[in-house]
Image 1 (cartoon, rainbow, N blue to C red):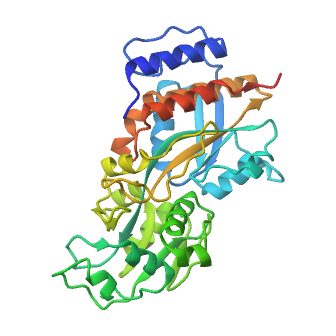
Image 2: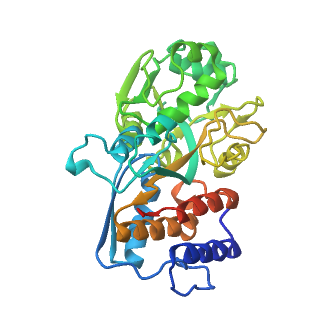
Image 3: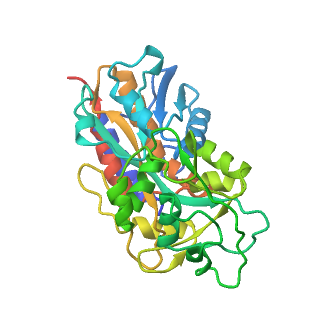
Length: 364
């Protein structure tokens, strides 16, 4: 799934042509072959998605190690807050950002508020998993679509409910109360999760719909950030919550195997995430959602994550630095995705992101 050497060089050359860069390209397809010499002491600030924050940390630290003249400070404040700060209307000086990040692509009404226009780049992808805390339960927990939607609707309230037991034959489930853990903040992870529930449950569709904020039905706890939700699950016996896959790996949380659209129970793996994303057709505006993927091998809850950039920028140095940084992320940076629990972008998606990235520039 990682862009090939030929693809990397093709788009690196395109960037040189569009941006007027003159640096030589390395045929070794190692560290960013499309980067020219950037002005010294460039500092960038971004904010948004907690879903992508672990990969961003790896990327920005690695990039700074390669190019010490560029420092990137990223604040994982949630997708909703990241969009608000990126739009920039009425925000405080300390909240101003050079780029945003969100797992819920901006809507047209939001884009219209961005001075100088906005470009959304799919930058990574992954799966939203249901992690749980059931001490002493060492079997694989299989949850049907009816079961996990019922849990978050507040209709299934105990772990030994017949609708859970039926898909876990021969396994003793405790008569323990189920505690759901939801996001407190405006969240792209919540958007991906509720987008899926909206697609598979008529009751969810009628009562709650798709949102970055969940209404906390049933016996629910609310915590900020993917990291916060993961930590609360770890501490709360009987709990279950939705988080980005990487955060479950960090704390070694148990993950439920979920029933997909084809009626198959699928474990959370990179291969299953890729299969789920493969049914998405990326349009010209690069805004694509996969609320209920088809295919027997598809994991049912997957999403892209977007970087938000201004189409034009009065600061030539900043625009150039942003182009170079995210070109590196889309090419060389994808190699780190799998080890960090994310999905490397398919070549077709990376190429569209690179083409859009090449189009950003300074105000004429």
